[in-house]
Image 1 (cartoon, each protein chain N blue to C red):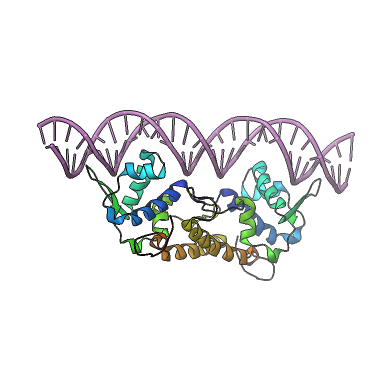
Image 2 (spheres, rainbow over the protein chains, first blue to last red; image 1 turned 180 degrees about the vertical axis):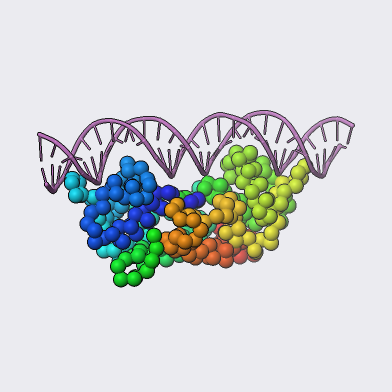
Length: 136
Length: 136
DNA sequence: ATATTAAAGACTTTATTTATCTATAATAAT
DNA sequence: ATTATTATAGATAAATAAAGTCTTTAATAT
């Protein structure tokens, strides 16, 4: 069990977009170049973020991607849900519903992690103008 | 990102073994039958639990598997580490070491989950003799 | 009308997980 | 000793999921 590479990219994309929020739209090409990823592949990931309403996209010249949700409000969990999907990490293979006590415990553990990541905002890690933090 | 089926099995195996701890060794055959899994496949999972010193195995007639670690001490995390491996859920694809601030946050989140699962014992969920809990 | 940009669909490749088969090793019972 | 019972190991196959590519379509600014 590992986070997908897509989540890795997605988190970094959001941070990068926060850091460049004042620069207008960022094109797929620009992002793909900067992170050294294939454009079409990155496109799929960004589209997931668009569908999750975290960012927005505009076609045509001068188009590209820009933040949609208020940057201070974008949490790690927002991004993770967009790329990993909703749905629990553990699902009992022997019993339906939540009758499995093991599953209940696993869900509670996941919940702790989830709550933490829902409170943590990617904003905190971005290096923006007035020395608000630092990162990559 | 999901827990593997192997982890699912492994957790249930331990609970089952706790519930039948007084019945001597449980053979692969018995376990495979009870859980409706192929024996050789289950064997691989049980071997992982043996290597993690959670259970022990003995060959030959009347052999099989039995708990090795004190049942009250076997945590969810013990089992998960055995089947999922150690190693973090998130590893930054752009920076080495722990220089990535995103990774640090992700690790902290994982830590919360891990601590919880290291405290929770599978024993609590087993239905053993003197009404100590209930489950499957 | 043209250039620029994103989205969608089909598909391929790679990696991981799940599962099987066969052979080997260990031990108890006879 | 031989046989039956039991686990382990190795090779490999099948299934699933993730990562990545190619091509077409749609939208928009100039």
